[in-house]
Amino acid sequence: MDLTGHWVGITALLIFVLAYLLVVIEEFTHLRKSKPVILAAGMIWAIIAYEYATASVPHATEEAVRHFLTEFAELFLFLLTAMTYVNAMSERRVFAALRSWLVNRQYSYRKLFWITGILAFFLSPVIDNLTTALVMCAVLLAVGKDNTKFVSIGCVNIVVAANAGGAFSPFGDITTLMVWQRGVVDFQTFFALFIPSVVNYLVPAAVMSLAVPNLTPGTDGEIVTMKRGARIMMFLFGCTIATAVSFHNFLHLPPFLGMMTGLGYLQIFGYYLRRTHVDVPGDENRHRAGEVTAFDSFREIARAEWDTLLFFFGVIMCVGGLGFIGYLEHLSLFAYSELGPTVANVLVGIASAVVDNIPVMVAVLQMFPEMDLAQWLLVTLTAGVGGSLLSIGSAAGVALMGQARGQYTFFSHLKWTPAIAAGFALSVWVHFLVNGHYVGVAV
Image (cartoon, rainbow, N blue to C red; front, side, top):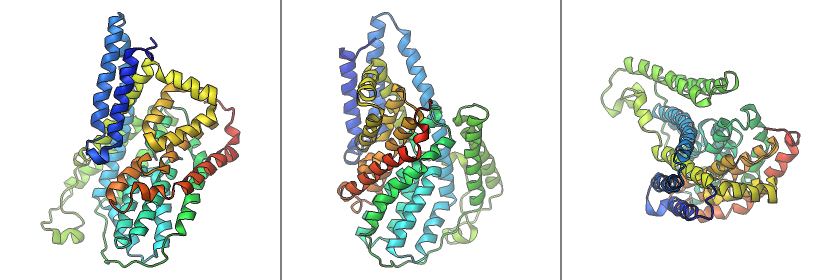
């Protein structure tokens, strides 16, 4: 039933808009973003189910909800494993050691600007853009604590680099992960976006670097060493990614199953670390002993970002409900039939800067317009990098506004939006230049 003009459709749309408004102003209300969208999801499906039950079609909504639940469950299990590995490597001080190494190299601010940006670009495809941004921001704050200008520009650079790097890998962003799990783009095909992503990062970075002072910061000389088993844990994370890709490409199994198998690798290795742990009391022995408390894989699972995971549940269910009502079909006809796929996909990127790329990409995947592979790659690129236009447009930007509070702000980012927009536009042009052979290729 098309309920777009019905009271059910109008009410559902208002509920979603109100819920997402609360998500956008989370920084001011301190209401976790998952709470309003979970409530909105329940309310939207309740009024849809009421209308269908009244029309004597009670089971249609149940089947639809189960479909969207399966979609969420695959994403949830995949992300839970990835988050657990990142937490485990953090507990083994992998990222702290990287930060210590960079701080003690005595690089100039300008060199650190480029190093942190390039590292963010290449780390993001592996450990996702949000985690990468947080790690690199910690480096900036450690070396630039007395230089607000450097921290401000450096944070903008990291957000742009992390989002650009995440756009050419299924593991780099939630949107790319959804596209890969849906089977729209093959794992190896994502790397066709590498050159457009490089352009998207380098253009604004080159402009911003001119404003970075060419001075050398001081250092406290602290040296952080990784804990026992850290290198093996990094190797197991690589094996986990390889398992997920192999399951999907060669065995035609969902990627989440490969990731959960990889979680088993970590838990078995965690069991070994726990069995061979020797208690060393006192923090004064931390660096000598390498660890004070025994490793516990379930502790790292518990430390997953549950607010984010539950937020995905709410968004998928909300957007699914709006699609079930009929809104996405109308939107798809207007955007992809009347405006054309190229204009529509560029607008998806611009919308990502305001609304966040996750609900936008969920909507695109549920509309599933008829597009060739070149256009699917384009929307993957624009949704990934479009969030860099504003500080509130991506999870990386929002997280850094909290981590570098007072130094990296909405307006300090907005100052560089013209340069970021130039990189965005040029990356779209370069995409068609280097990936023109995908035009007309069916997905």
